[in-house]
Length: 193
Image 1: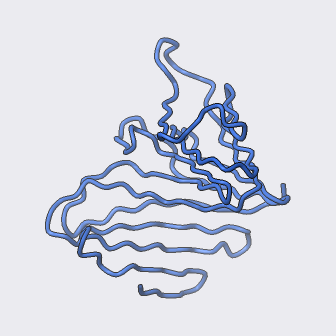
Image 2: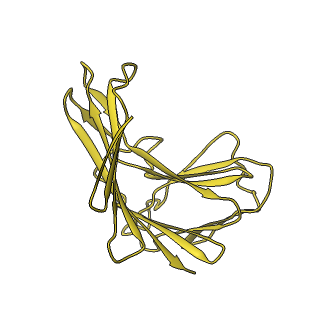
C-alpha cells in the first residue's frame, strides 16, 4: 500500500489487484474546527474489461452500543411497499437485540453469541451508533430509486456478532470501463450523547 499526507488529509492506496483488476483508495479529510472526518472512497478499473461494481464501505463499532436508523413515514402511494429488507441465512428476526418500529430501526448491542445481518433502504443516508456517552454519526448519499443497487436493491446493511457491530454503506451499481474510476463520499462525526 502507498499513502500520502497533506494538510488535514491522508490518502491511502492499495496496490493494483491483478485478480480483480481494481485499484482501491480512500482519502480522509479531517475537519479543522469540528470532530468530523470526510472519507471519500475510490475504485479504479485498471483491468482490461468493463466491470459492474459498487463501493462497499463498512465501519466496525465496539460491542455494547446502540445503533439507530430513522425510517420514512411517508409513502406517496399507499398501495406500494415503502421498505425492502434483505436477510442472511443466519438472521433471526426475533433476535432480542433488534427492534424495528414504524419509524426506527435499532440495535441494542449486548453480548449474545448469535450473528445477525440485515440490509435495507436507508432513505436519509444517516446512521448513529451511541456507546459510552459518545455518538458516532455517519452521513452518506441517501437512496436514489432511479439507480440500481447490489444485494437485492439496498444501500445499507448492518452485521453484528457478540464482539462488534458493522455499519455498512453500499453505493449504487456502476458499469466501470477500463481506466474509469468511481467514488463515494461520507461524513463521520462525533458528539456527546
